[in-house]
Image (cartoon, rainbow over all chains, first blue to last red; front, side, top):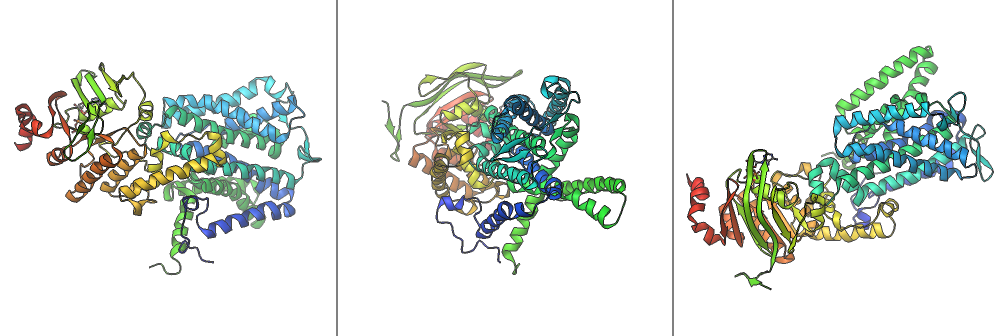
Length: 358
Length: 268
Ligand SMILES: Nc1ncnc2c1ncn2[C@@H]1O[C@H](COP(=O)(O)OP(=O)(O)OP(=O)(O)O)[C@@H](O)[C@H]1O
Ligand SMILES: [Mg+2]
């Protein structure tokens, strides 16, 4: 199979702006989708769902969300996990208050509530930039975790201070709670990722996406073109938080099932999502998926190699895992700050010339 | 109606923009001192003056980056209140910058498409679904942008990241982005600075063609006197924030104060 765009002439603007202008990419994408939707569900087991696929899909949503804010609109945020917590607690409150509400409606509403909260915390971005904004979002992170710990209403006064997901069915199949099967959890997340990926791609390629990028690249030039910085930044915060809120909702309802806020949504998780964005590639949809996959798979692979393969004690392996992850992140920041997305673009460029590089 | 016809056959209409007794201070520095002039529909109006005369500041006042302490601005005959630059853009004023201000993370096409922002209407929801109106609108404006791309002869660099372009082409892309807004009034801050003779000639031709084809009223800051005298209908001369001359190129050229203050300096 040759990776070529020769002979693939664009005869209309529609064709020129389609999602995968090169035929090879198109075929590749749809093959992946068929695999993901029609093959993997039959083979997936609890281990693969819980260790790899479900966390990957959920982190992909969060990474898309943060990438919209940071990669596309240029606003740094260290509050991602705090906003995930908003999504999680919104789902919990909605599920316990309205037992008959459809699960997908709950997920979307949780995203919407997080969008409102995120927009409110985005207000300082109108005045402050860069490092100072990062600090402000850090404050949001700590405030939100504190809030969910402190106010019993959020966890329905439960003695443990934890929230745990009630069982919800759809078409007679459990999708949340301990009875939910691996394939169901996987498919629910996959379907949501598919829709959100489509939305992210659409938003970033049109008028609104360009207004975000304009603000990111040169804010005063964006203004003279008619982009209102207030609307551009707040819409980026809203959309970003919507995604992250949904990620938080799924993280709680599908992945963990029971959540203690400081543990599940602490600052480390905010950093993890930021690393996924950076390693994947700022301002790239593909990169968001690549970054999430990389940082979810890496620890799993390392653990299997070190503990399973070499027979090391698991605590030693865990420490080494941290070191290797740290080294990889530094490596990426230095060698390829544009992330996996750029590496892939460069590879494609080479493939295009292959096998005659001159 | 007080329209006149220029020797080369273009029609110049009513006053489109009038600035009246504008004074702009930065702390103690008076960058603009009580300046008034008008710009008529369809004309190419030049602003000239030595470095630091206040030319760029004047454009910044017109497009709303700076708010003058005194004076009034009339656009389309109506007095304009203090507005944000983005609101002024929506009224139909576009500009380019003395130091190129392109969106470095985007390619040429996206930079120019961004220029259409004020005209595009689809909502966030429609954009998210990319069905029907959002998609159609994108292609409508893509076609307009392609027209501008052809017009400015930059087809070959459509998909090139703007950071990778040579200086002269970046200036051209910036002009394209401003044109994509289909402005009533186009403000150009030294569009030919730092260009070689050939590039300057191209740029002159584009400015004249834009004016002729779209009837775009243009305010132009330029240091090259030859260019200014060639392409502008009327010239304002600033010096140390004051206006020292205003009129058709020949008038300005023979104005003694202008010769002393500006041309004199240039020939020192
Ligand atoms: N934001 C600002 N703060 C303080 N002073 C300013 C500011 N902008 C401009 N000035 C001052 O106003 C005066 C006019 O500057 P301006 O940039 O308008 O000159 P110019 O005519 O465009 O010059 P040039 O030919 O060098 O571009 C200068 O003395 C400049 O230092
Ligand atoms: Mg200037």
